[in-house]
Length: 221
Image 1 (tube, rainbow, N blue to C red):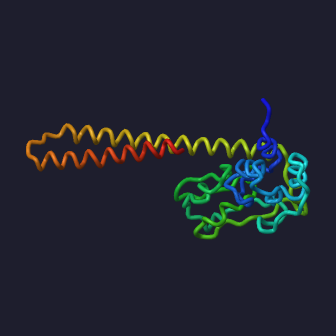
Image 2 (cartoon, rainbow, N blue to C red; image 1 turned 30 degrees about the vertical axis):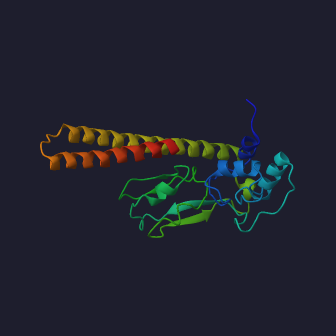
Image 3 (cartoon, rainbow, N blue to C red; image 1 turned 180 degrees about the horizontal axis):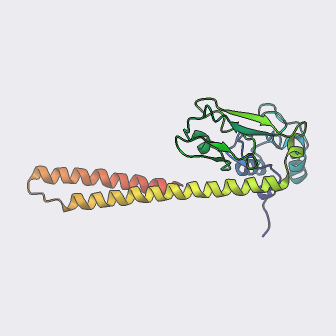
C-alpha cells in the first residue's frame, strides 16, 4: 500500500500527542502540513531534527521551531504527589496515551515508561499535584526520544481513540434503546379522554425528537 504524504509526515512525528502544534493530535498536524495549511516547525518535541525530517519529505526549507508553539527541551515525565492527589480522574481523561492509572477517589500514578511528556495532565489537576521532571539531561528533541518510543505512543493513542469512540457509540445505543422502550410504554398507555390522548402525543413527540437527535449525532461522528 502506497503511503500518502500525510502518512509519511506522521511517521516522522514524535507522537507525543501534546497538541503544542496547534492541532488535537499528531495525525491532524501531519494532514495540515500535507495540505499546505501548517508550517513544518510547529512541533517542539521533535525539535530541529524533527523539522529536518519533515523538510526532507516535503521539500520545504528547514526553519527554526516557532516559539509560539514552544521550545525544544529535554523530555520530561509527569509525577503525581500522592499526598495531594484527590482521585478526581481528570488527569486520566487528559492523558492521550493512557499513561496514568487509578480509580475515582483513589490515588493516581504515572507509568514513567509510557509518559510522553505532553504536559496535558497538568492543567486539569484541581489541586496542582502534578509536576513535570526532565529525565534526559541535556538531550532534547529526537535525541531525547526514540522511534520505538514514538511507535509505541502512537499505538497507545490510536487504541485509546478507538476505545473512546466505542464507548460513545455504546452509550448512544443505550440511550436510544431506552428512548424506544419509553416510547413503546407511552404508546401502550390506555387513553380514553382527549386530554389523555394529547398528553400521550406530547410525550411521543419528545421521545421521537430525542431519538432523532441521537441519530444525527451518531451520523456526524
